[in-house]
Structure formats: structure tokens, C-alpha cells
Amino acid sequence: MSVLDTVDCPARLKELPAAALPALAAEIRERLVSVVSRTGGHLGPNLGAVELTIAVHRVFDSPKDAIVWDTGHQAYVHKLLTGRQDLSGLRQRGGLSGYPSRAESEHDLVENSHASTALSYADGLAKAFALRDQRERTVVAVVGDGALTGGMCWEALNNIAAAPDRPVVILLNDNGRSYSPTIGALAANLAELRAGSTRNLFETLGLAYLGPVDGHDIDAVEAALRQARGVGRPIVVHCVTRKGQGHPPAENDPTDCMHAISPMPASGKKPAGPSWTQVLADELVAVGRERPDVVALTAAMLHPTGLHSFAYHFPDRVFDVGIAEQHAVTSAAGLAMGGLHPVVCIYATFLNRAFDQVLMDVALHRLPVTFVLDRAGVTGSDGPSHNGMWDLSVLGVVPGMRVAAPRDGDRLRALLREAVAHADGPTAIRFPKAEVSGQIPAVGQLGSADVLRTHSDAEVLILPTGPLAEVALAAAEELERSGSPATVVDPRWVLPVDPALVTAAGRYRLVVTVEDNGVNGGFGDAFARAARAAGVRVDIRTLGLPQDFLPHGSRGGLLAEQGLDGMGIVAAVKEALGQAPSHFR
Image 1 (cartoon, rainbow, N blue to C red):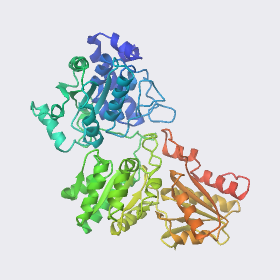
Image 2 (image 1 turned 90 degrees about the vertical axis):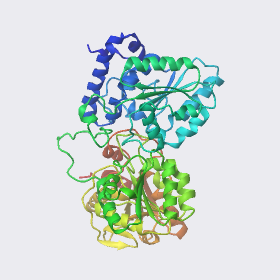
Image 3 (image 1 turned 60 degrees about the vertical axis):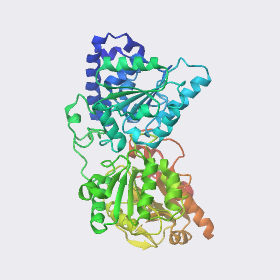
Image 4 (image 1 turned 90 degrees about the horizontal axis):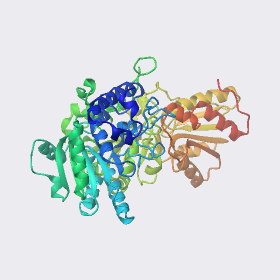
């Protein structure tokens, strides 16, 4: 039996002799490489956190001691050491989440997959333990150096450092990177500390400090953590690690040390078509050549959002602000005020963090800022915190905001150009984490929308958003076979609703809107409000995602479960028309 197989809980880990720990670390790395190469997931961050995670669980007593991970993508080792050794279904439906999960284990306090939040959780936990006279419990926040580029960390530190009677152990996992190398003045200060400088920002704030410590030396990390636990006031334990440690392909990956890898397809072949991100990346470079006023911003995701191509061609026109979405949006507002057209490339789910800035800093001033929302809709394997199913609801309340959803690569290219040409307020373009489907030509126009399929006897109008046009067309084909022909129209610009679509809806018996956004406040809701305001009386059915946190699983599987595939659309139409469901061929 391997050493890892004997460690089914932190108590077993504490019983191991120190001499067995190097073998345990090696077995953990072997399992991570084996499993994550097959399932996909965050490999590099976890390879770099093996020894420090072992040390954390040998020194502290989880769950009595509260351990919070920031971000949670570095917690695979934590899962292995807390009774979850079967990673075979990682990030797949029915398997383990790729982040800490309260539903999985009492050792997981939060699903901390949005960065820079752990110190705020830690501050609150420390206050709660003090108020409830549970001072024997220790709060530990394992924070990556990339997370410290987020403003919430500094808001939390401002409070943590001001309360020396509430001890918090901040284990700083410093590998010099988030996805890419950590940027800004903080990164420079950490580099100086690693080189032996005494100019210590944390001590200036009033925090105790230990380090730097070799984060791959279990004995050294254990000793530092035991010392930190005895200090009795807020303290930073600065551990220096290497992302991808122990796996040469990750250590030598120049992009992001194999930060997140995709699973190998069952066929063993890589996807044939480009991703939405790649299409965006190429077209933004073309726009940049034509428009010297176009600049781009990212929140520590240069490569994941495709901006590395733009940065290669126009290095002085790309700004990586770190994990700081709020700052990114207001900085973009400043760039727009200065006469430029900023393109903010961000995951749809992370836009939630900057809603106030979108509303009050960009929209209030009617500034021409374009938001490119990658990973919109169901992302699948990343789970509930990463599904980009809120953006239409959020952006729908922003005055002057225009939101586009391209159905294919050609439409993405065209809509990007329309967005950056818009000078009277903000725009947004949303697309999923997926391959781009084949081109879907229009057979006509209706206002700013594209007519994709029509029939002279159609009583049903289907309005799909973005790539869901493909399944809407499949549904329309089946409906025609069963005697219920439908017209399919792609709105292109889904918000605000085009009045031409509303007028056209009055000619149909049934309108079905289809979107991979939450049903509350999405495109369907907006269309229904527009129809009521225009006095158009028509039966409207909204197909979208339930207002809930969806589990991890495949994108296609999750969409099908929610009726957002061809079969689901047909069933919804048949039900609305009072017809028996047909067999979808």
C-alpha cells in the first residue's frame, strides 16, 4: 500500500514520521499528473502546493482550525489529505469539484474560486471566534501571491492588522504567478523579500512576518507555521514555491506552468476547430491594426482571454491590472475619457465583481468601453462559480448598455467591429467556452437581427441567443416535419431588444426565446417586457437556465438537462401549442 493510501484524514497525516513525507509528496504529484492529465483541471498550482499543504494539515487541526484557500484551484492536495482520494471524476458530473466544496467535506469552508476573498473570510472568522469565546481555534488563510493583487485582500489586511488580539495566520504561497507572472509594485516587493531585502510591506502595515521559507521543504514550513501559531497576533508566513514543481513539462511551460489543462479527448485527437477565444484574439489584432485608439485590459488573464496576441503586436496598448476587476473597469473608464476605446476582456462570471464600476463609472458617463465576456453561459467543468449565467441579467439594468451574442465566428468578428465603432456608451459581447460551430448564414434581415429560417405558414417564432442558434435550427427542422413550422431569428444584439423583433412577434401564435443565462432578467424577460410595453399580445415562452447554482459537468450535458437543446426546444413548443411530443430524429 502506498503512503498516500494510508492517509484518509488529517489525523493519519499527523501520525506519519517525518521520514515518510517526501515519499508522500512524490505520490501526491504522481497522482495529480495522472488524474488531471485525463480529467483536465488546475495542474500547475497544485503541483506547487504539495509540501505546504502537507505542512498545514500537520500543524493545524481542520476543521476545528478554519483553513481557507485563495484561490481554491490550489486545493486538490487538500482534498487528497481530507478523505477525498478518488479524483477520477474530478470536474465531471458526479465527481469531485475542482474547487473546495461545502457539500463535499466539513474541511471545506468556502467554494473559493473567485480570487482575493480568503482574507475577508478569515477576518470574519477571527471575529466570530473571538465573540463566541473560541479563541483556541486558529484561522489560516492560504493565499497565492497573485490573489494579493486584488483590492479585497488589502481591504481585509487593513482590518486584520488593526486587531492584534485576533490572530490570523496568512500563509503566502509565493510562486511569482497567478496565470502569468504577478505584476505591479507588490510583485516587486515580494521579489525583494525573496532576495533578502528588509523593506517589508507587511510589517509596515503592522503584521508580524516570517520568511521567506522554502515552500518545498516540509520541515521548514512546519517549523514556521508552528512558530506562527504561537505568536498570538496576525502574521504572514512567506513561503516561496515553484508552480508546477516536480513535473518538468509544467515547470518548463513558458505560458503559465500548465496552470489549467484541458482533458485529452476520448479519440486522442485535439479539437479541429478554433475556440471562440481564438477567433476573438485574431480579430482584435486586426481591429488594432486599423484603430490605434483601441486598447485592451485584462485582470491577470492575458492568455486565457486571448489578449496575448494583441499584446505581442501592440505591447504598449495592453494593460494587465492583476486580479482586480473593479480597478480594470474604472481604469478603462479613464482610458475612454482620455480619448481611447478600451476593450476589457474578462470572464463573464468575473464581471459580477465590477458591477458598480460598470454602472457608475462607465455607463453613467456614457463612455465607449467594450466588454468581451469570455466563458458566458454554461462553462461546465469549472462548476457553479464559473458558469457565466448572470451577465445578461446584470447588464440589462445598465442604462445605455448594448449586449451582443454571436452565433458563429463570422458574427463574432462583425459584432466586435460594431461594438468598437459604437461611441455613445458601453457595449458587451458574450460567448461560451467552446469550439466555434460551423458558419450559419442568414436568409434575411429583420431590423438588426438575422433571419435564419422562415416558413410562410409558421405560427412559431424562435429567438435563440448566440450559439444556441444551431440547436434552434435543428428544433425548427423537426417541428416542420411534425407539422408545426417555425421561423428562427438570431437577434445578434440581444439587449436592448430590437423593436422590429417585437413588432414581428405580433404575427405569430407563439414566441420562444432561448438563452444560456438565468431566466430572471435575461433576454426572454427583456423581450416580454418590450412586448407588453408595445401592446403586442403573443404567448411568450422563455427557455433559459434556472435561477440556481448549476453543478459541474459537461457544457452539452448541462444544457440538455435544462432543455436548451433541440429536443428541449421541440418539447417546449409542443407543450405550448397543446400538442403531443414528437420523436426527435
